[in-house]
Image (cartoon, rainbow, N blue to C red; front, side):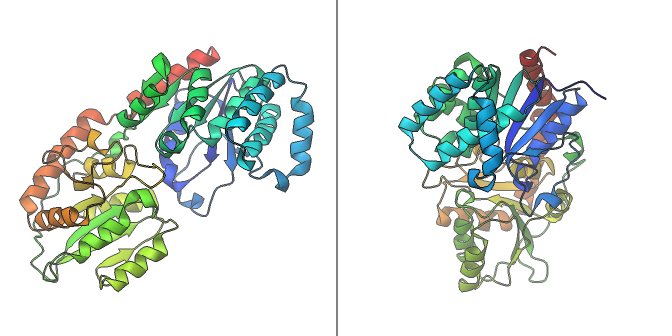
Length: 410
């Protein structure tokens, strides 16, 4: 029997197809000898079976809603009141509740009681993936147990959380990792200080293509269309409606097809829009798809498009993993100036960028790239060279493991 874990990690849900990068990180931490207890705030969704997951730590699920497990929550509350830091956690919760009087805030405290009383006694540190609800739970639980906590911040959690919430979490956290420069600067402005660490997501070496596939399609052959691929959840910040509107503006004589991969709540509306704009026979909606099939689709494609935008609530992408994977396969990318995308796409060098939400500009760029296979080849080649140089996942895993080992005394 192995030693009891010194570390606990909390995520919102596990496994999740849109967060496969988290599973890859956990696998890397386990390869580096880190043992951890894994907790999730909710059970996995219907796409869990599509995740290539070999994480050894078995996830334990906290009650997603307190009323669904009243006895478990009540017992945890009684036990939590005996913990040395319960009074500190209660004060922090009451302070937060005065700023956000909401049922969700009460739910986080109840989940924290369950977490604090469920973690092995050996745990010395707790790490949260995402700075919103998982960190709220972790912060209260860590206070109850009298131990430290840290955060991995990504995208939505950085841009949609209120300033006061981020400031309190940053003040109390032992360290915070951020995967993109835009998010790093946002947290630095909220008082992140020396505890902030910029650690970008990287790629496994096997994802790097050996060479760029020669491009020849130019949109002139009806029977051999330019293959455009988009890998993105059908949510507001991915800008997929802008993509549909842009495709509808292309000349009808231009031969192209779009393959979209991903689920999401906007999928039905997007399909209806494509049909209404007479794009039905040019767009294929594949839905949630395993990663190996995504890589195969990239290898068949001529152009990758991600028309990301900033959502009405401020939500935006960091550095989309699908985009850097396309670059690593040597595929030319067309994207927008939103979130952290400009950190990995240099317009005219490693891809093309247009203004976010501008369907006219996106249509012009699409038309130019569809008709110019030599340009697509050059952009794909330069992007692949960048990926080989800069997208080393192992270096990032080493840094995260070091930070966690320092906190657990491993």
